Amino acid sequence: MSITIPAGTAVAPPMPDILPDVKPRRGLLGFIRRNPTMAFGAALLLAMLFVAVFAPFLGTRDPTALAPALRTREPSAQFWFGSDMLGRDVYSRVLYGTRVSLLVGFSVAICASAIGLFIGLMSGFNRIADSIIMRVMDGMMSIPPILLAIALMALTRGSVQNVILAITIAEIPRVSRLVRGVVLSLREQPYVEAAVASGTRTPAIIFKHILPNTLAPLTVQATYICAAAMITEAILSFIGAGTPPIIPSWGNIMAEGRALWQVKPYIVFFPAIFLSITVLAVNLVGDGLRDAIDPRLAKRL
Image (cartoon, rainbow, N blue to C red; front, side):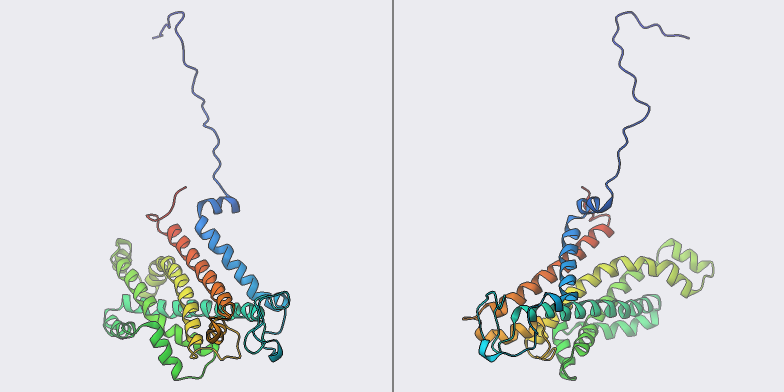
């Protein structure tokens, strides 16, 4: 049956068969537009990594060289950030301090995440081990991390390795409880119950079904541990319980300049600014990872 259209009737133009080609935003520019917070934090963190790696080339003097005749000089062309009470170049010491803070932060984040992941998996998948391990973790978590780190450092001599060890032990309980909570949630999922019912061995279930789903929240937590470790290291060094004074770290530099804070504030100001920027960068990367991993918190632009 044919339909006749009366003469003079306006006919709408036919719809195009092919929709316009909308290309998704890709590449570096697309990533920055989708994750501006994470991109900004990553840029700051990369800048700090660049400073740490090329500190010998960016520095103007030996950070440990003493020059008593040039002590407490104001910032100038000779001393960009001024000099401390022993005549050492604050600028060079701040640059080398970046190495210590990043080394401690990344090392603690990796070690605490690895050990906490193992403890959390074992505790979350074994009810007998859970009742024992979690009581120990609860006891450790009852002590503030900084106090636990100070107590551990009091039993050893000051060194970067001992600082990393002390802060790692203080951070392990938080990682293990996070992983345990994720494992307890995943253990009740239908696909895990089906794997158990089918006779799949426990190690295979852990590595195939449980472990991959714990990596996302663990990665986000690792960034916050890294930032907290850098702050804790600075506090330990500031109170004399961290790295030896001969090692240029931000906490040591601020500790050496606190006696002259009212008259020479730059000795404390510059390392504090570098510490704040680095911690901010790591936290921004962590926030960006959290938003990208959790669909409910993702920012859709």
